[in-house]
Length: 257
Image (cartoon, rainbow, N blue to C red; front, side):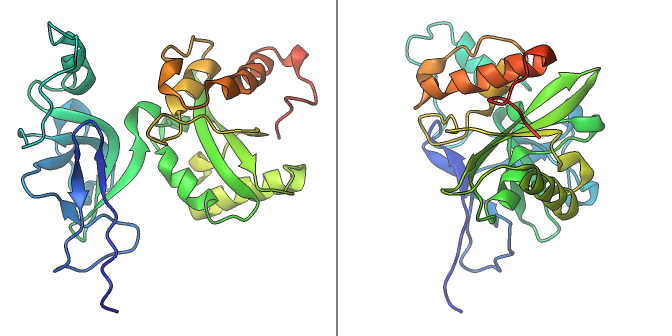
């Protein structure tokens, strides 16, 4: 009863946390309690408009004032252009961290995953973190990664799952996974297709490399594969993406449900 459980969120790039725990305040399930001291954290919607809990929406996690551990720039970036493009391209002088943030009525926050990997099926903006949170409790799923595929002007959610030992992604389990996400979240969260893969690509700070998968689905080069721990696993995703774009090449090895 007297144990303080605090979820935190920040980044190695700032050597700090934007959101932390408060041992003097209540902890609400699924929420981070408060911004860190000295962190002017907000959720910004379109055109930099601040979001409040009444909006019931998620926006960009921004820090509107300089903070103690604010980086000064990138090594070798003499002009500062790369640094500015990475963190200040949204609004001048406002640090945009690249995460989706939702303020809650409890005064806390929910982080929904990376904004550059957010999904927009049917015009509904959702975070991949919402999907992963639901799948993490299922015994048949060891890990997962989701990305968007543009089809006829709309975005389809494509889900890749690494199965737990002994588990098999068959039509029955595929239906169960879609129903689980649709029931627990919404129809927008239910993936159009689900594929079993051998490995989930990760960045060197142990985050799912969603942008890499999104670029593969779009038919674009991944780019900075050196940022991944296991870039060799991308070949399997490339094969699946090729089959999705060329249905005549669809075979049992890449078949999704």
